[in-house]
Image 1 (cartoon, one colour):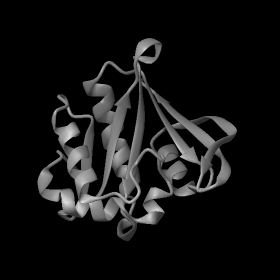
Image 2: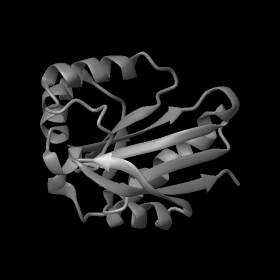
Image 3: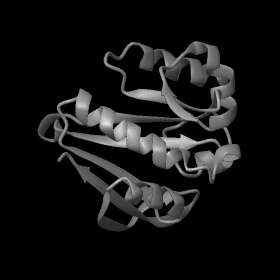
Image 4: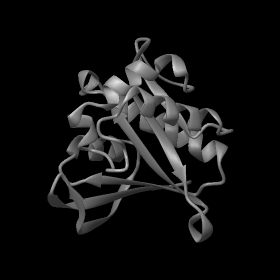
Length: 165
């Protein structure tokens, strides 16, 4: 069973180990420290614990930490928008966790925040993430050609969007 849970420092060590996987890091922004240390995990969790209401959650599967999901609220003229981001730890890939977590986080975001649009950027090689978003009613708004440099490769960025009903 998959569930979203509040952040807790009790999971900092496990979170760091799961996040530090190169296959997970390859799918995210370079602003994420690499390697992702226990200190990085503690610092990140502490920032999240101060946010009320919560903007990020741990993803658990059968009572085991399996990933993380959350939003980044936008500002200024984009203040009614949020960006969603997530990762599933490699041992849990292929179990539908991202699809379920996206569904729950999307519902929570629209119910909790004054948001009318959620956007997700997905690197061109991450077809599983695109499929999980599409299953949740996100649509492909655009493909930003050659807009990302990741691991020395210039790639396309697929922009997926869900609007509040």
